[in-house]
Image 1 (cartoon, helix red, strand yellow):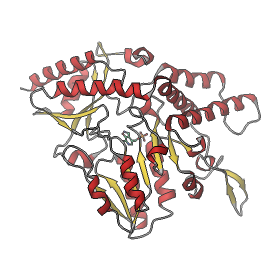
Image 2 (image 1 turned 60 degrees about the vertical axis):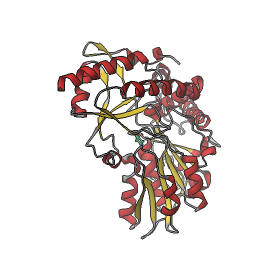
Image 3 (image 1 turned 30 degrees about the horizontal axis):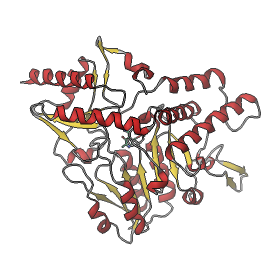
Image 4 (image 1 turned 180 degrees about the vertical axis):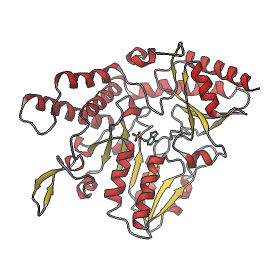
Length: 400
Ligand code: PMP
């Protein structure tokens, strides 16, 4: 586990060393991920699952090995429970339009939380529009912690599905998803967990969580963009109708009737993002090699260090003060618009995110139009945080 594993951290921005604090938007990739992608294109470029020739066999082996690495990382009962998708967004849409759509009718209810990313709101709203179902919301308190005690009352006999984020990308909150799943399951409500921000920071064990679905975003967990996964319980994946139709997801086609392929191929229509999948496997291997516990310890230390320092900055308000957080800090700085702050910090070589972070309802809760967000990965350093705080002070002075 080494900062030097991440070549992009060496670039200069405005002639200053890059300080990359936008890891929640997308993380950097280690050289091993870049090498795995290059190796595929340089040495084994062929389509998967279809060819009898050697190169196709090699590409298929690498592609399927990536699925196995992800199964190990997630403690999935089998690699067959894992479907390659374009990312969390596609994984949620897949579940909404197959599993949920086939069980939901007019007047039924779905539950999401107030802190969801738009990717875990809009697909459910689309489903509600299509079916006449109703979307209900589990609120959070002013620290940004879900009000779990309200969940049992929110669930009714009409509740057909719940979707909740494991770790919030704007507030940083780590939700007690195991407890949520338990409450929901006691009322026969299946649960999808959005794991985009949990995977790069904390141990995820889908069997221990007992969730019905778990979504993974490759680019947040040091892998490539445009690739992710959906974990599903096998009984659901087998019962669900396919999402997209096309090649690969069939076992037999006639004009009268098509017989679908077995899971997971049933959900992987068309030529997949082969290089992306192989890169994702390399990212999983990187995390497994260095241990997520190690990674979590390092980024929690950065979170605590930065939180302590930021609280001393005059006029700074941290948005999202839950007890359990991943290394994401949203904040506002009195009289300075977050976008202006982001632009000034960029001139110091510091990359942060500003805006609503695709969680408009969560930001609205705090009565602010936008926040600035610094999000750390284990490869960031305390020296970078010190420089960030100094730069914040300079930015603030400019606005006084
Ligand atoms: N959920 C959360 C919590 C996220 O942070 C993101 C990405 N910002 C997504 C979902 C969407 O993930 P993807 O980019 O893989 O579609």
